Length: 308
Image (cartoon, rainbow, N blue to C red; front, side, top):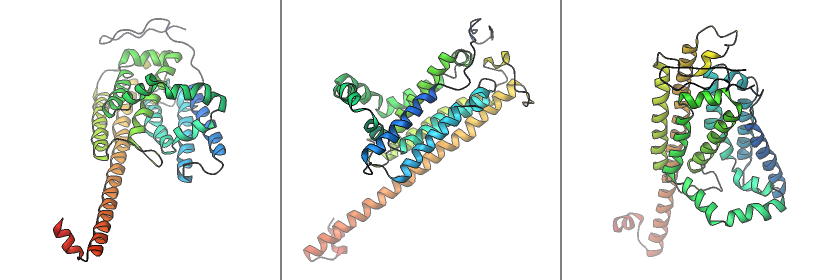
C-alpha cells in the first residue's frame, strides 16, 4: 500500500513508505519486561527491598499508564488523529515514566535479573569506563535537558513525524528514543529514597520551567497555524470525528499546551514544596544544634544566636 504526502514547505514523504500498522506498539514489551523483573526483584529482596509500599504502587501504576498508551484504542487511533498521538506521547514521557522513576526501578530491576546475566553481562558493563563515562555525560543536567528537547522537537519536524507515522519500524524508534530521553531526564529530576540526584532543587525548578517554555512554544504554534503539517491528510479519519485535519492539529496543540503545561507546572510546584520542606528541616536541625551548644556552654539560645 503506497501513499505520498507532498507539502510546499516540507520535503515529501516517499511513495510506498506506508506499511501495515501493528495493532499495538511493541515498545510495550520493554516495559512489560521491566515490570516482570521488578516483581522478580521484589521477591529476591524477601521483604527487605529499598522501596516503600507507595513506591511500588507508583511503579505498577506507571506500567498501567504505559500499557494504556501503547495498546488499543489509543495506539491505533494515534495513526488517524494527531491529538490522540499527542495524548499518547504525554502519557509515555510525562506520566508513565515519571511514575516508574518514583518506584526506584534501577535498584529492584537489577536484582530481578538472572544471576548469570548479572555476573557475565551487567557487572562487566558496570565496571567499563566507557559505559560509566557515557552515563555520567548524559546525566549531566544540561545534557539531559538537551537530549530530551532535541528528541521531542526532532520527532515533531514534519518529515520525520510523517516517517514515524507511516512506518512502524521508525515509529518504534521514535517511542524508544522518547522513552530513553524521558527516563534520563526524570532520573535527575526525581530522587525518592534511596535515590539521590546531584541536581539542586532550585536548578530543577529552572530547568522544568525552561522545558515547559520550549514545549509551549511548539504547542502554541500547532494551535494557531493555518496549515496542516503532517501526513494525516492521506489517511482516513475515524467516522466519529466531525471536524477536519486542521482542527485535529489545533486540538492536539491545545492538549500539549494546556495539559502538558499543567503537568510541568505540577512538577515545578511539587519541587518547590520539597525544597521549602527541606529548608525548614535544615533550619530546625541548625536550631537544635545551636540549642545543644548553648546548653552545654551555659549560654542562652539568644546569646548563642547573637554570637553566630
